[in-house]
Image (cartoon, rainbow, N blue to C red; front, side, top):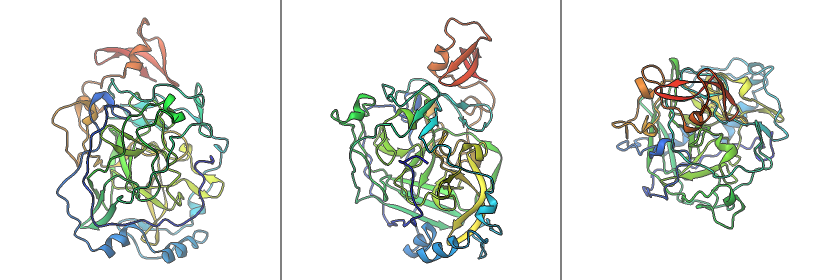
Length: 436
């Protein structure tokens, strides 16, 4: 595992609060992860009150240290305790459940570059299944020397300077009536941020002039506490989950459908803000403790948990070990009990996290990045049909890079966008490179 991502088995301690500071502020117009020139970020979801007592919130957010340690002690022999939700109590050890999986193939920090690795028609392992693609976004202006033709070196990448703590950071996670409610102001309760806007004196500025500040948000997410698998994997629009430290998780791309973790400048915790001041991660943050495969470090917007990749020291799950949505079914710790459940895994390699939804999508504000009207502020939708969803009707507009790749070429000619090969074809009225 790379030096920036190695952590031990320190137990996670969430800081649970009972209120959220509403201080949404605008920033300079910098598209970053916002595709197609629209705001596209998660919109505040209002009107949800946390009715549970603080003890219940703490119980759901994290089990006690004693419970965690007792359950971890059982990893080699299997766990036996009460059930949690609809998940099944694990009857096998983690070692047995993940036998033959994992390794440390990225110890040298050389990672595959994910530029252009998306699909809009069906999920594909190692790709992001997008509901739509749009042109007009902007991200980092200059490729750093750590970026190669098909790989990039995470150990050589520059990080944004600064370690800013946020004493007003707040997140609550409660469960009632089958719904898990997460309220956050999007500031990290665990970890720090860099200094944003990126300062001109910062070495990172020569590659990425991100002018946005980190601002407190006012966000509420209602997710199923006992999610079920959808009939087929669901596409994603960009926002895929929220971490237990309150920070939003976006998909693997920047606004130009390049590998965001490789191209964009993040701080030492692998985060940065986009327009509107919304701080977020695209990949596993080295500031979140205990990134083990049994520890829940976030929740996807279909309700399934997100864990770290570490099976044991020196043994980590990678994309090759996971399904097309970047998930797996194996024992996970919930309320002090190891239960067998589907969960997503944050890995070192692209696409890093959720690449499609295993369950019904409750992604906030779906379609905002497609520039479509009538979708802003809507939640609880499983993906839109027709032109925007990539599931039928008119295909979504291809990005400008795909159009440029076929300029002057004939239909059927080979083309390449980033490291993704394709064929020149007419896509919804545009002549562009269609991924093979």
